[in-house]
Image (tube, rainbow, N blue to C red; front, side, top):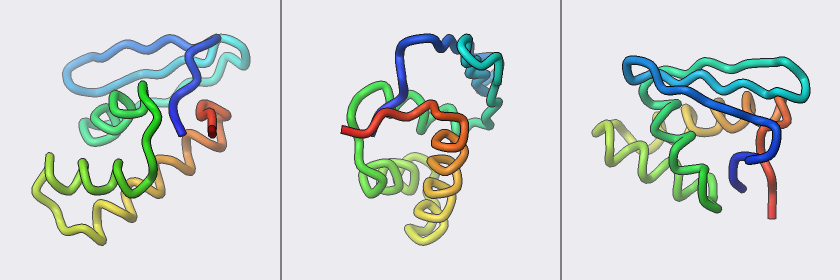
Length: 85
């Protein structure tokens, strides 16, 4: 999966990310960990790859990283911001 590139724009502000879907006029704001994951999603990644990277970057437990990653992916999917290959 990866972030859609058509019809979206994003801006990083003080370590947080604002993603705007120009097609639906919906937006998503993220915290630092969401911004980290979104940047990884500019290329094709699996949920496991994302969770492992999050755990390593923020020195958090694997189960916490997996839960946080799943919740973030769910938000992106609800807003139709992801492309699955």
